[in-house]
Image (cartoon, rainbow, N blue to C red; front, side):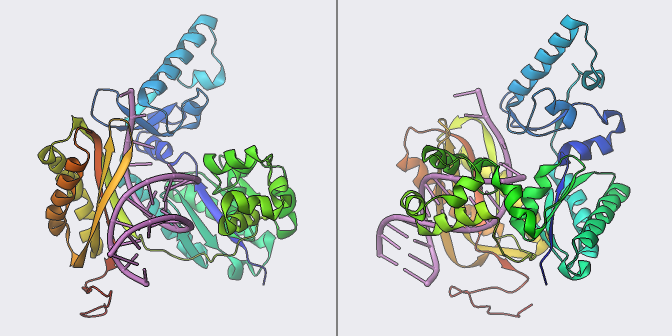
Length: 385
DNA sequence: CGACGTGTAAC
DNA sequence: CCTTTTACACGTCG
């Protein structure tokens, strides 16, 4: 049977969730911010509501830049005595709210619960998106799949008060591209026969998985659209990208992909934070790492996860990132990670003497789920579950 | 092959 | 002067 896959993407997820908590904010320009704590306004925007996006505020901007955009907008509106619809909704009063990932995770988990009731298989792909395989339930019928998507959108709206956009296609890649087509509150179906036409005119950089670097290289080769990429001579691509990646690029251009929708367990957990001031002092760094590891501990303990590999992440004053890691002989808990981190940090600072760090963090990986322990060869040595 | 470090990508 | 978190590919080393 022809596979049918959906991709659901929540609309400006963080901002919409905050608007639910504080209904007076609904429809207003909101910027959900990660305040780094270094200065009053240091940090970045993690998500912006649609009213804020209309002012040019979007995820990734520094909070300072976002405030400048908000101010510029207000000034322009005042100067013209203008009250256009988007700005009647509250220009000049962009709400800059702190981001609350714990809470967003709770909402996200409930939405995934809904999806699991509606689909044959669900794969979470980030806090605000998920793939669903609906082949069996739709009986391979695109119209039925569309009805299912409408039902999912209705349930998410009724039960969580949130809108989302859904794309439907013959595989995950096309479904993902389709969900981006119409937002917010969109629904886009791309049948197998329509895949070619759907992708052909898209700039290569818009294809999921092709970022700035790859798009730049392709453009340098005169390849600008998916159709041009699909038709590009194999030889040139392989010279630039190697065999494996070339094949991947070609498949993207053609919308060919067939990986299953499957529940995945995280392979690593990490936390990164900004130091009050740049430092090369092991003790100051350890203090920050202890705080960060505490929040990781909560997440791991709750799920009964242990790990073998600890990675120290250091980001210097020029924003260059370096890592140092060590794998232990047996699975460990967070308490055992601290002495390992201390070792990694001190070797790091002596190696990069004079290079002060701005941000530090840690990653825990090589995970073991459940209560079993594991020896060096990765064999389960106690109870299987 | 496992371990380690880096780059790319998406969020 | 700028966030966070995760995944994965690739090169290299022993």
